[in-house]
Image (cartoon, rainbow, N blue to C red; front, side):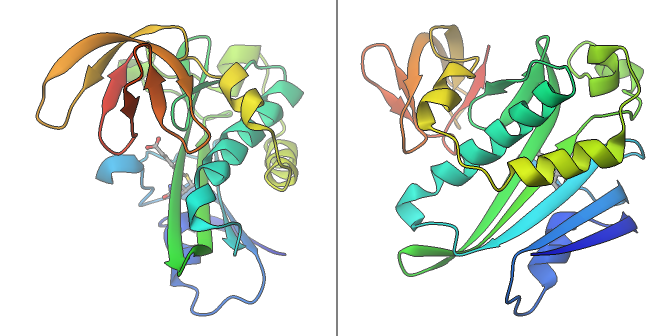
Length: 224
Ligand code: BTN
């Protein structure tokens, strides 16, 4: 595995996706991103003090097991937060929250080859010591805010890279999830919404509602 560090880049995901033909896994870490990207085409503000990294994994698993990449990434973040004194919980499918506020977002971009994932770019942005803008303080937090301490960012990044090469059981993902057992609002792409109780998350990454309905993350948005 190769590690590349940048003081500034547009997006660590974009950098890894631009590599023509990597022959080993590559981790890209940036102090600042000028074009950080989030899910659903959103931008991701990436100010100095946060942890912005992506790992390019070659042939991580079969395409049908793609959700294991999501689970392992979210749990790697939770284990890293725990090592620094914060209790991370997962909002399905892959946001991590502490004290009810978002602390981390994950953007996974896979390239398929037949029934395998050929390359998986797992991008992770964690608020560590970076300031949280006043207008989002009620919905976002940082490790520094949650623990009351300035964090050693290099140690945080190194711990996260280590944890990204561990594998965690599906049961741990469910146990750390905020959604199962909760009443939620399901919002469909056409804007229709309804209340339902979430039962669990399946091994293929769908949210199962009490009553049996299965929802895929690409199809719905949920509000807790
Ligand atoms: C989200 O919350 O919508 C996902 C945010 C993912 C941000 C990370 S930061 C490192 C990597 N590079 C990017 O451009 N995005 C991901």
